[in-house]
Image (cartoon, rainbow, N blue to C red; front, side, top):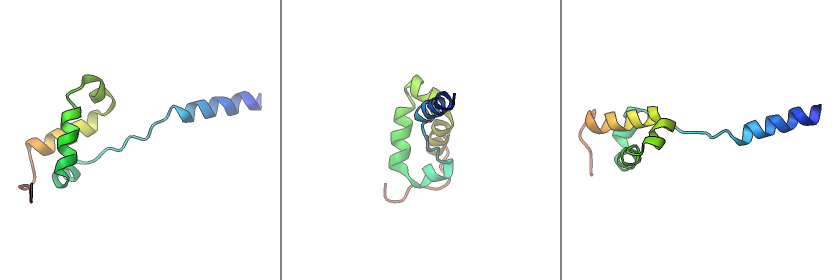
Length: 71
């Protein structure tokens, strides 16, 4: 029984992915990453997995807090 529980836990952990979500402010300061994220957010399947990150990147592009420096 212990082996079955251990195996189930390992399978669950293998399926977990750590997705990094950045804030709108972070995208305001990282324009290259923002533009790449906005481009990838055109894929509906990608958006469904990364919705908050896409919203933050798109909002940062549409409503920048300050003008870009050096872009």
